[in-house]
Length: 612
Ligand code: M6R
Image (cartoon, rainbow, N blue to C red):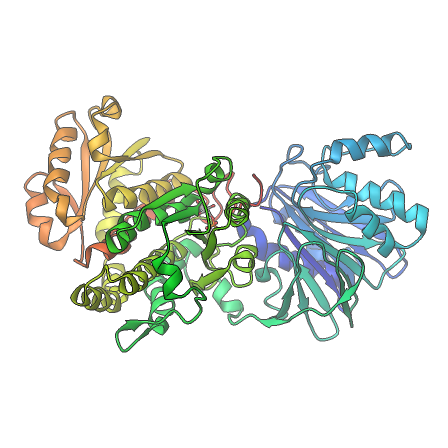
């Protein structure tokens, strides 16, 4: 989704803005632009459709734009097609004000009509240009850009993270936020804003997160934040505990591959600090045993891969807790008039902590009285801040659009939460508890063992990369894992792919299986291995080309029927998907590589989806 970066200091702003935007490229975008104020009070706006390189070439890497104050933006089109005119920053008709914006202004049509009635002209199709012209209107009226910003934020409705510069104020920019992430970075003789810390981590790890309704006035030497009523406030500052190398490729061809390889270490960081004397310690949780015992129902709410974690979680948590668990897509939950009350625990899962649908579902559940416990990767993100309880996955920055290490760490943490609750509820026996902890401690090493031997996956990818349609089939946890395997493949390789519960196949979809159709049969869920085999035979009888995934102990049995078999180490049932998903991630990666796809930045996708 869109990215924002802003800089004010002693150095030239344009190269710093370009570098920041480059670090935000992973979020997905279709155009980019910067606005810089020169010492002569000139507001220079440069923008271009396409990759950042196009813009960078136009402005010679920033050298041709002079000035030490500026804002930059990468746009993911919502209102109006991706083109140079709709790209941000938007400049007011009088050339005084430039604005970058993330989010959507809902009442922009009404405001545009209001301004048109006063002679203002619009050149783009965007909602952002309305903000820019409204600012110019109020600035012309009151002569103070700060006052004008407050007038604007009291008139606009919707979501916004705004970066604003004014030709008459070459020493400061203004930032404002509501329902879209924005943070302030504190440097030495310089300061920043960014929609994502990755953009500025090279310069500072000292940051504060802006809250809804806040406005910040930022110069090279000062930052002053105000609340919605224009009262100055003190911001809490925090230190980002990862550095720039964590957000770089480190010798790998793609971030996705790097992040796949990082999974064992990421799981250690997620889990091992939370295990002491073979017990799970969740010190960060505020809910107590009485609350846990009184939970009547658990909802798991998320989108995309985080939702797939929830599908695994439904199976595992219901087994461990003997309480009803419903997993719901966030975009569906919010409009479903959900049955939620004070005894409902809502587990919200999100890597970015900024997904708009998930955020809206969280607020809906909260308003109905539920306790919100979120599992989030990005520290200080909106979902983390609005939850009653938050468990961080500590996976470090995830840059590839296709999630891998975030998925794996969410999965582990959700299982740990289940085990922790199960212990309190007495629904998990002592021996089972110990067996699960033992397996959890062994999980990263087993994953490492798999990641050291990827030749067979590369080989299968080269056999199948030309297929145009793939079906993943499995039962129970294998079905849940198949959802993720299928999403990974389709999002980065653009191959049509579907995940089906094997038992459901015969109720319609089996009609699509014909000679040569690739079916990836998942048979790692030991209790239903025999049933998985029957489904393999069923699709083979219709001509399917089957690639099977199973555990080492079932490999021989599988090979009696299927020639192409990938094996994964055995684990406790609840962790089997954590191992099984790794070859599926790698398969998607190598298939996409062979198809020449832009793996880290797949078409039409964004890392953090902040529109509905
Ligand atoms: O940041 P979130 O976990 O809330 O994001 C949810 C989905 O947008 C995300 O998982 C998406 O499906 C990924 N691209 C999948 O790889």
